Image (cartoon, rainbow, N blue to C red):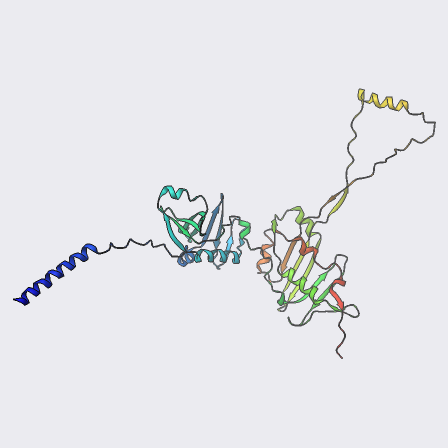
Length: 379
């Protein structure tokens, strides 16, 4: 009897425990947004994308991936894109994380300043594989607000990339892809005529000249500086092929010829339109005929009469000619490569390429700049 009572009591307690658990159990956790703690742009989207479109402040630029894997800027003469700049930007996109969902309220979303700052990736069929609109930067804690497509949600990310909508800024400004260590020989002409050729058998060997001045040897630092500025040549602006400044520059070029250790030749010719001094045209004398000339006639009447054969009095202040200075034009680089398939040859057919002035003015002006006293021989 007592055993039966105990069993009934245990059963009742079990039922009560189950009921209490059901009543007091916690509510299931709310569903977590799948975007949180994920990259802003997935690696899969990057892989599928063959066109990157950036928009900001009413401007848009597109970069397209070619069949050979290179990226071009179609809107800037289809020049090849700057790979370092592009890879850095894409790296920022994939490293940025979605930190939190900020709001789903249309009113609050409107205050986050989502305008026309947009990033888009498209595939080969021009189908969008990723699109996001960037809002303003967060005031506290850093980061930037973002919306994906037309979703009624705003997120906060730690993206720090700048969207550059200028097409020219995405073009690869590098004109030469040769390294200084690859150069075996340099022919250097001078403005007043003559030239010096320096060469080396191996990259670690010192530079030598065929007929150096007596007691002189090649100044290694000067040659290294020259070679560095030429092999790292970059354009700062481009011009149309019919630009008069380009035509004038081509008539005043200094061609430096580089020969590589594998016997390829690269000619780098730099020049610009020289500055000029011109006499300013004299100002036109105002017409003083008619009644307006009476005052002058009265003044002439007051002057003493000149005897026959006496020369006219010269002006106390004869007019001296005035000159105006016309500054020199921009510096252009004209590059040619012995390998017909070298990209620089095709590039030169598209535009004229302006470079920094100091690259041109820093060229040696005289042969003396390339030599220094030779060190004494070893005992």
